[in-house]
Image 1 (cartoon, helix red, strand yellow):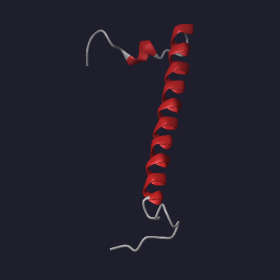
Image 2: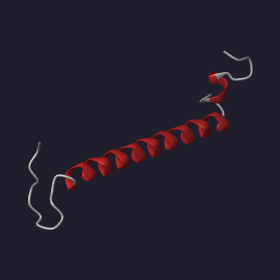
Image 3: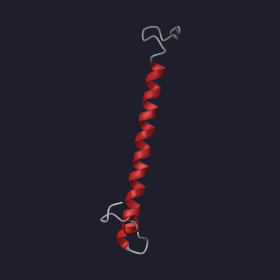
Image 4: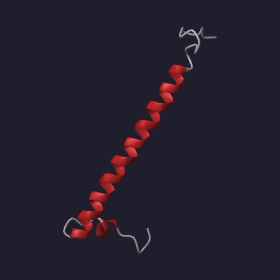
Length: 63
């Protein structure tokens, strides 16, 4: 690893800066999970809408 980046110093629980970094990383990971879940739900809804005929609202035959 690089000499500049030491994960123990960046996320040190004894300092205010380290605690702030832990909080920022937590919020960033929660935001990333939220975005990924939203993207997954949107693509699954698109797949479901392609299975129906727009004009008649009946299920289209698979084939």
